[in-house]
Image (cartoon, rainbow, N blue to C red):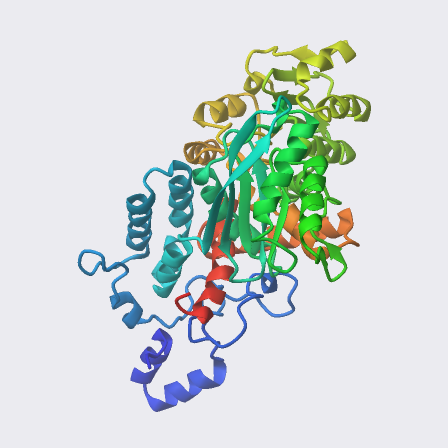
Length: 518
């Protein structure tokens, strides 16, 4: 058995010096594969504990702690497809993992981009403990990927067909849980990319939940209510074979609201006897606003950490779906000033800001299936529609992109920073491109990644029926503190994206180490 580095050095000193050192130093167990302590609470113990903070990798204090470096694992080949491939450094391991993802799934550009971004954060972990690189190799492949045909009849009697998906990515920590998304952009690449990210996001909560994502390539906004009902019933008829209480808990994502969720649950209940667990109904839509409220609470924590608050901040909101509108509601409650919404028709801009009355008008418009924001200008004498031409030309303090993937690119970051924007907080999945993240760092703009900010749904489901907004805010404060401390420990001070990926990965990886090659 190999000895920790400091023990080896102490053994070479005199016996008297060794006894003196032993009397003043207490050995701490290493959070490696040999550790028998439960790993599921590794992240949650970082904050709110009476004991001093320990390293996530070794159980000791600080970055330069002693650790058990396993030469056996560093000498093992990471890949053996065409000869043994080993790595010498953590960066080399990360590059090898990205190259393997490209070799296997080169056509899945969104998934590759997410893997590249995550592995760029995880290199320091592989450097400290090489065995984690082998866990990351397992984690790049989902446990199960289900694709199926969804056949339904439209209003004129024509048969229609869409593709349905459910990727059950990881159940290492607990039962699968994750959103369902409907949209023309949904395909196997997008589902796999979201599933990979959800592993880290769900693990961050500190609750025992796994990771899953699903959906279908249908545009719900140009369909009638009857067509959506028939589609949802057909989709759930097949999906019901793979989901259920204590197995896989779907939640609301893009393109799915209370009506769609109700249709899905109705069909599930029709073909299954068990539709609840522990008093919690399956497919519950009781916390529709949780994702948006969670985004704002994270923004508030980020500002408090800088000695600031949301009070009086002018906030640019991209999108007008349920998340965007719940973001606006919570911003107004906390004293901020939402000034825009957008959709496929363009954007509306209220120079004096949105109040509750104006937000209610927006809600009435957008609650009608397929309705566009352009109708809002009839109800407001002060609103500007598509003026200025680009929404990013509007001066603001904070930006909340709550619409599509990749809405914020390098050019958008440049415009926002030039107009005085101090931070971008994602309310949508992968709204900021990898290139834009680098530009944000260069420009010194605060960034809240979706891996961190979109954990509201998982938190609320874990807390149960009695959850309140105060409880949600408290959990978010804890998670933010954990991520911040993790980023500091791995020499990434202030980088919440790196801190979220590292903390989420370690919680899953520490459990997977105990499970073996499964």
